[in-house]
Every structure is written in C-alpha cells, then in structure tokens.
Image: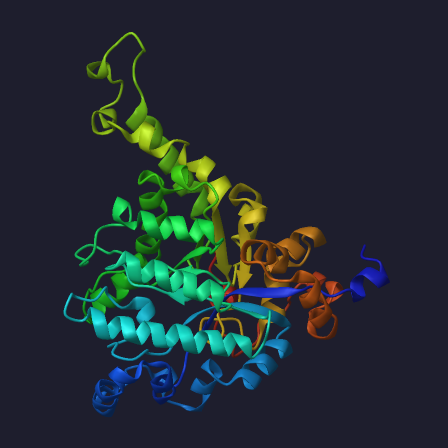
Length: 420
C-alpha cells in the first residue's frame, strides 16, 4: 500500500512526442531576405490541405503561453518537439514529405532552415522545457552537418529529425556510407537522431485502399531505419550514437529483434573454420559476405547500446512487454496537439496504462529516461512538477471510466499488439 506521504509526491512527466510549428506567414522573417519574393508568391496561392491547421485550435502549434497552460493542466512539464505546420515552399507537412528533387532542393532547404530558426526561438520561450528537433535534408551532407552544428549551438537539444528513404526516393538508402558525416557529427555533439512515424512512407495515392494500406504500413516503413543503420555499420563506427524511434508503438520490438537476430545469424553462419565460404550452412549466408565485419555486434546488442523508443500514448497491452523491450528504453509521449494524442486526458491515460506498476518504473517511463536521453535538467523540471505533475496516488488509481470524448488509441477497447 502506498504511504500517504508517497501518494502526495508528484511525477515529473516529459512528453517525448509533441508537435509544433509556425503559422505560415510567421515563417517569412526566418527566411533569408533573398527568398522573400519567392515566398510571397508561393504563399499567395498555397492552399492548406490540413483541416486541423485551419481553425482556431491551430494556434496550439505556435502560441507558447497557451501551449504551456494546456500541458501543465494535463500534468506535463516538458516535451520533445517535432514539426507540424507547413514550412515555406513545401506542398505538405515536412515530416511526411518526400525528399526534394535537385531542382526543388534550394527552396525546400531554405524553408526547413526557416523552421529550425523559428523552432529555436519557440523553445527559448520556455527555457529547458522544450527539446526542439532540427530538420535536415539528405541530398547534401555539408548542408546537413552545418545545420546540426547550428542547432546544437542554438539550443535545439532534441537532436535531429532524420527523414526517411522510402522506395523510389531521390537519395541513397540509409545504409549508404554517404551519410557517414551525419552520423559522425550527431555522435560528436550528442545529438539524438529521431525517426518519427510518417517520415518514411512512399507516396501511395488517395484511393480508399491506399489510405488503408498507409495506416497498416506506416510504422513498418518507419522501422526500416533501424535495420538500415545496423546493417550499414553506423553503430559499429559510432557506439555513442543515440537513435530514437518515435510514435511507432512498442509491442513490435521483441519480435522484430528476434527476426533481426535470426537473419544476422543466418547471414554470417559458417559450417566450420576448416571449410571455405562454399561450406556455408545456410542459404542466406551466401548473401552475407562482409556483413559480420561491417556490422559487428548482433542487432539485439545494438538495441541495448544505441536505441530508445518514443512510445507515444502507450496502450495497456504494451506495458507488460516493458522489460522485454528494456525499461530504460521507453519514453512516454502525449503527441500534443494531435487528435490521436492524449490531451486533455493525459492524466487519465497514465492511469489507464500504468496504475499498479512499481513507482520507480513509472518514474523512468514518464520522465527519467527522456531526461537522460535528451539532456533535460531533471532537477529544474522536478520543481515545476511539484506544482502541476500528477500525484503518485492519482496514477495508482485504475481508470474505471474512459472519458466519452477521448480520441487517443490508448483508450481503445481492442487489445491488439502490432506485429510491426
């Protein structure tokens, strides 16, 4: 039974998954002046395709005071921030946009840099409470590396948002050694690499079937970065690299690790040291020349060494797998201000998933792990949580009734674990 004094203690909740961005006209001052005329012409004809960015609630993306009030009301004291609104010269949100063509690169890069500079200013309005992520493109490593250095110098300690490389993309796949300068600078500066769901899916159209397939496949495409970097040897060369997979669920991890370890064994297996390569024991090992030397450790070992999970709005059926995944890997996220996020019922979401767990485990998942991975000042955040954080006693109380207007999947009645 929880002692009264312990029940009154408060959790420090850091959301490892939030989204923010400027209102479209407000990006203009962050562009280099040579792009202002192009921006004015583009903005005059651009039609925003996203309903949630067209009504009054869209201000939650850029209204600092309102955002802080909303999150504190929900018990959250800090957050990792990913993009949400549309940066200059983009047809859609940059998170899900394809890599630009050579002809599109200059303007798209100018737009992303404007967003990064806006993000740095937005984070500075709540010092230590917003870990903004820096966006890069993959078509020019000099540009990308320079932007990562700029981001670290200007307080974007959330790290780098890594774009995906879906089939048919205009840049090499992530296992290519062309990206070595990016991995190196992220390790050097202790900038976590973030790979968010939605950033790696190919264009599949707008037919009903395509939208259904998108929902089924979105996390699988996001997971690909995991094995691409493992097999590309990035973690062998850069053992200090932090790689965070966000808003991709968590129940898939044990099975995927088992699968990756199986293929790793199959690709490197030989019958005996007395036999040459023709004596391979598996058919797969005929494709494995050089894999052992390039990769180094087994995938599961890299999971332990390098990977973390932005396990947004964890469902109750995922929680029992926390030790198989690695308790120290899990970081809860509320996904504010998205409809699938937990706002305004984050306290209820935490009760729904974590009531009955050991308090030290809840402390790690709700804030301790994120503080360690991203470098939040936990002592400073603890002071804020003393006023707004959910109490231990509150989270200990199982949720009996789901709020009628809650929209987050964490409250869903279905108990289905994703296989990826």
